[in-house]
Length: 508
Image (cartoon, rainbow, N blue to C red):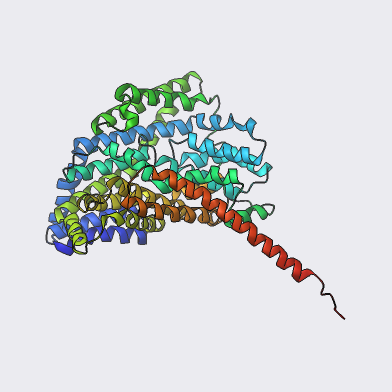
């Protein structure tokens, strides 16, 4: 269909940016694609979408397996959060926090330990650490920044939680449509070293703490910290449950990891696992972990069976939106194939002699814009991956670098977007003014994105995973250089102020 074939994809991007509604954007794009396929016959298009697309996507054995897995994950995560174990775990470490650096590192490591829920990190860790930050006169904006940097950036690097499963599901569908004999799980694991923005968003916390550095956008809130204003916050007791223990967290996770190792062996770590085996092992692991968590909650009388059942079902229901996005993304990919979207884009790239080495950088920048405007990482993934995977394969762009660029772009925009759910919850968890949080962490995010942009340009020509260490070294050296610049600039300002305030000496 030529250039007409890209209308649904372009429409999805524009609508996501304009409406901020990913589901609406995807659905409208799917429907427009169906209209193009059926000569704008509304009835035929509706029948095609329901019968040949939605039903087919839901009854596909792979897709059904992913949906079941997402439901298991949703139930387990909700149970873990509401068990009080995560709160008890974070609370158990508080006795070690008697200096500014220790309390900030404590919040950092606690956020990483609660990796199973990007939304749970700010709501659990925030209320635990907020009193320590207040006592030691560390700004709430700094706490919000730490919470934000240990939520989504950590979650997107883990293949066996919701984020990883979602991306793997999108990859598997594209590989299937392109008849590629690639393992989606292995491809995701191989892309982790190239998901540089997410990694830098995490490492910048210990780097700046060890170097004693803050960007001025953050430092100004430390200076004005004494003029505190009461802000909306979550209830501190929300995740504090009677008789909850710290092992409510680590024991079920040990069961989950033990199941994965038991069923998959060392190949699980190496990323050499077939998609069907991975889904089966992961579903089993979450099921066993949930059973163990339910058992210890009942034994400790922290919740009744009726309460536990309601929590678990509630967690499953929270996955509805994610599943809808996933099904719509799969459908949009199928409609795009029927329209010949990828064929047109590939041919276009060839005609303009586009160098595949530049694709990762282009994808990172585009993903950053979409996710910032839409406030959704997952929406960005669902729109971009079906486009860039076939292009990367045909124009010989580095596939794993390109996947990492999509994930990094989605994370950057989501990390700094004022309408992102994790950004909003980080502000709430730290009891911090939301716009102050967005403003204070912007410099850190832009700094990391500049390094990531250079990284994707270099890795486009040399896709070596070792370059991730170069990226981290550049981050460290960059912080040192900026700190030195600040120091020189501050000295100049002091000298200028001193000269202005000094009385003139008469020479008469």
